Figure 1 (cartoon, rainbow, N blue to C red):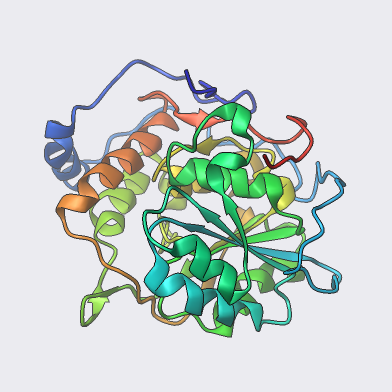
Figure 2: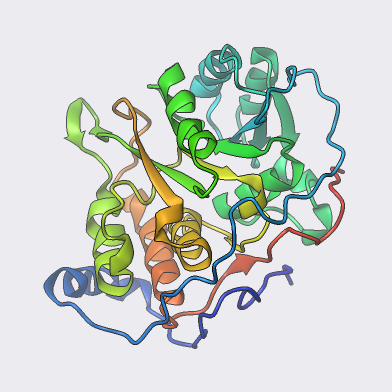
Length: 320
């Protein structure tokens, strides 16, 4: 059995056995858009500082690391079968003067993703080889959780490997709020999401599932414009203190947990250029939509958590 945590010890979300079959997803989304249900949820945060619990652990010596500035930045790119885009992304990110290290975590790719990323100059790790005692990585969130374990920077910036619109503004603007204000824990992007050749209309899971769920069960986060986007920044001290949903629920889970633990004011949004990436079909979005909805419900006490435990104090960093 995978070593998962149900629920996370530092959160106050009661887990129930309420399950929602896949066949009911469309009805659930329709109900979310038509009605507002109020729950007596303790939305008060526990007053922790985003810069607490920063562990000073010796990092790996890698060829991708640069001379450390005051705040070190780890750029972590989870990747699976993204050989056509990951190379250009890695090369562009490595040109940024603040990218202390660029790490690609390859998750069971069947193409040349790992080789392309390595040739482009990234440090490439097999996600299953990071914390191997937890078994193979189970999904995107599990890969991100493992990336925190091996990241050396004070700040982690995650970028999706299929991103085609990266410019230096992505990295610069995502880290700027964290350096300007020590109270900021998490920076979410704010950008237009393209769909095929259209300049807007992207983010179908965001608009049809995530935003209605936030408005209904977590209204204090209804102002977040891109709650599911894969390009965002977080303090490592914050990332190690929180559980990670193992799948596509990871982004909305971290968003809700950061607000719960550090306060809504600890979340900033950064205006970025329009996002261009590989668009998925509607059928391919069914499972991610289920996982996003389940995660939003879990933080309201209406579904179980499927999460890895907080990394802080878990064990020394190690790669198989």
